[in-house]
Image (cartoon, rainbow, N blue to C red; front, top):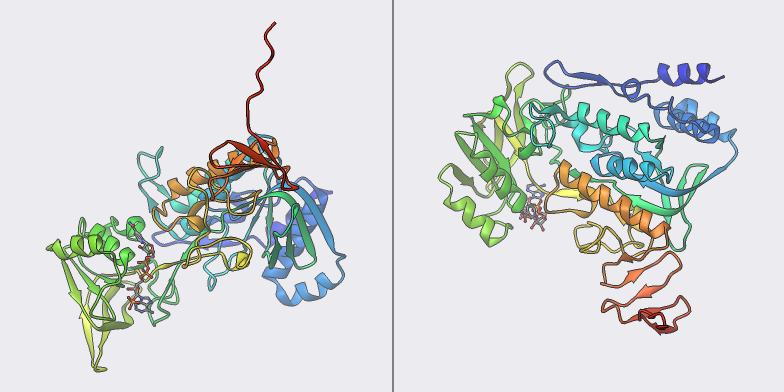
Length: 430
Ligand code: NDP
C-alpha cells in the first residue's frame, strides 16, 4: 500500500545543486516522507507538496480535500540545527514531535535544513575534525531525528493562534493543535537586491558573494584577496574584522559617513590596518563571470557618480531578519523582531511556547549555538509537559497548570489569582 505513495513523492524529489561539484538529492537522502508512519500525516504531506510544488495542480487537488486536524504534544517549527536538535531530544524523550518545515523557496530564502543548506564547508562544527559540507551536516541531523521517530511535515504555516493552550497552527485546510510549540524558524540575511547578487546561476551568490564571513571567509577563493564588505552596523564590523584573518585587504562600503555599529566594534575596525572605509557610497552592481567569480563592484557616490571598484569577493552585511512575522502581536520581540526568551530558558512570554536558534539570537548566530538552544527548548518543553516549572522571561516560573512561582520563589500564584506561600512542608517528627 505504501509503495505507490512513496514512488509518488520520489517522483517529485528535489535536487539541490551546490557549487564545486557538491550536490545532494535532499528528499531522497533524508527519506523525507517514507518515514512518516501515520496515514493522516502522509496525506497532509502529499497534499502540501502538491500545494507548494505544483500550484496549478494543487489548487484543484486541495478543494477536494476535507479539513483535517492533527493533535500533538510537541510541534517544532523549522528544520535548521535548532529545530532538528529539539526534534532529536523530544523524540528520544518519547514525546513524538511533529516537525514542520518550510518548503524550498529561493525568493523567501527557505529550504528544509535552514541556512546551512546554502553553506559549503562547515569547519567549526565540533565533532567533524576535517569539516563537513553544510547540507551533509543537516542530512545527518535529520537522519538522527528520524531515527527516534520524529514526524516531518513540509508546509507553510499561514497563521498561528497562541491565545490559549492548546495552540493552533493553520496551513491551508490543515489545523495542527499542540500543547507545546518550539519555534526554530531562524533568521534570513538581508540582501540588497542588486544585479549580480542573486544565487548561482542567476547571479554570483555562492560564487564570490556571501552574507556570512564566518561560513565562507576562510574559503580558498577569499584568501589573500581584496574583499568588499557592505554595511555599517555591528555585523559589517564583525565580518570585516573576521575577514582580515584571510584577506589581503577589506574595504567596508557604507552608504553614510557614520557607522551604526557600537563604539567598541567601530574602534576595533578603525584600528585594523587591513580595513579601509569607502564612505557615502552604495554598491549598485556586482560584476564578474561564472568562471572567474566576482571581479568587481559598481560603486555610486553621493553625487551620483559611478566607478568600477575591483574586488574578489563581496560580503553583504546589512543585517539579518528573524523569521518572526507569523508571531507578531502574540509573542514579545525586540525592536528588530527577535523573539524574547528568558535568560535561563528558551521560554517566551507565552507558557508552553519556546524559541530556539537564530530566531531568538541576534548575537551568536552559529549552528552550534542554535543546536544548543534547540536542546534547551526540548528540555523546557519536556519539563513543561511533565508539569514541572519552566523559567519565564520575567523571572517567574510557570507550570502547565498555569501556576506562577514568583521570581523570589516565596509564593505561588494560582490560575485564579490566589496566592499561596511557596514553603516546603516539613514532615512532622515522630
Ligand atoms: P544593523 O541594522 O545594526 O546595521 C545594518 C547596517 O547596514 C547599517 O549600517 C545600515 O545603514 C546598512 N544597511 C541597511 N540596509 C542597507 C541597504 N539597503 N544598503 C546599504 N546599506 C544598508 O544590523 P546588524 O546586523 O549590523 O546588527 C543587528 C543587531 O545585532 C544590532 O543590535 C547589533 O548590535 C547586533 N549585533 C551584535 C553583534 C555582537 O555583539 N557581536 C554582532 C552583530 C550584530 P545605515 O546605518 O545607514 O542605516
